[in-house]
Every structure is written in C-alpha cells, then in structure tokens.
Image 1 (cartoon, rainbow, N blue to C red):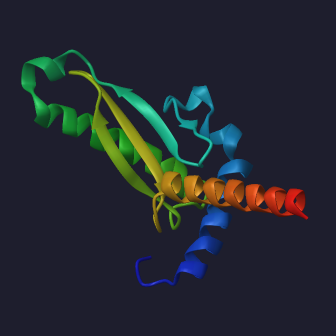
Image 2 (image 1 turned 180 degrees about the vertical axis):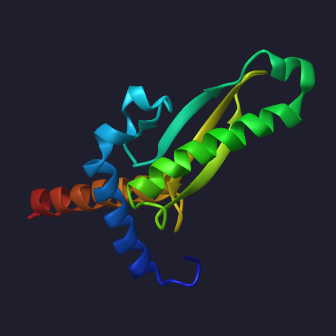
Length: 135
C-alpha cells in the first residue's frame, strides 16, 4: 500500500469507511466475543482483558493472548472482505492485564487524516464567512 499515490489512498480510505459503516452492526456485535467498537475516524478498537495468569507468567503469555485475539479479529475482517484495507495500527498496554488494540486503514493513520480534513473544512468555512462578511 506504500507504493500508491495519495489520491489512490484517499479513494481506498473512502471505500474503507464505507465498508466499516456498512458492516458496523456485524463489527460491533457483542455476541461474537470480540467487543469491538468504532470511533468517529473509522478506527476499530477494543480493550483485551487478559486472564490473571499473565501476572504470573509475564509478557510472553500476554503476547500469546494478543496474537490469538488478533487472529479472531482477522477472521472477521476476512469474512467481511476488508482484509486489503485494514491492519493493526497500535497495541498499547493500559495496565498489567489490559491491552488496547487499534485497527485501522493500512494506507495512513485514520485519526490524523480525519483530523486534517476537519481542520481544513473549518478553516475553509471560516474563510468563506470572513469573505462574505467583508463584502
């Protein structure tokens, strides 16, 4: 995905967002056991709660649980035909047993792109309002 131009990445990001919105009920379904959520920029995330054994046996066991969880999420992503678009963006340890797993668009960071679009829109709108009020 790194070899693609910016315009192509933006088009693919739009397709990604459409797929996320179209499959929102399936992605956020509580019965699949994945406890996934979607934020406003289209990232898919969840907090993985590891069992108490992780305290005893350390980081290697936690990595095993994280890998198993990501494999389950990946099977859902493949089922929804989104595997070309989505990838793991970040895994952050919250505390000893809990990990934040964030998935998003592979081409670039959803949050940064989304915030840039919002900022550009606000600046453009304020420029138009200023221009109208001056004339």
